[in-house]
Image 1 (cartoon, rainbow, N blue to C red):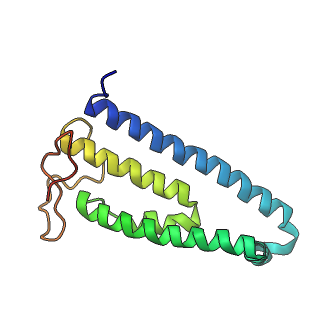
Image 2 (image 1 turned 45 degrees about the vertical axis):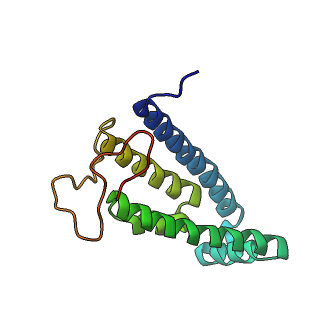
Length: 155
């Protein structure tokens, strides 16, 4: 079986990232609503206080919470590097969106936008709305003019 063509691979990756973001949003929203409903009598500040208490209530939750925070930091660094490479604007929104929305949602959306940029650089996909194709590139953020199907971005 032959590997898919670059444009088909880009389309499949974008679809996977979109499905991950949608599934993550649905799951995390359902869990958040359930928690808020269960703690509604505590008021808005009480809901937040109860969440933080429950999130750090024992060593197992501390472990999961610390792992999530460290993963968020590592993915934030990755997003900054890739945003500069592919000239993706407003990378801070994806990083701040992780604790506000969910890490699975914000990272999946970032990866969708990144893959759209890669496809556009190959000439196999649409240029995303955040494109700076007509703007001159600054000296520290350069995106490749073309990306061969077998290689990553050229610097």
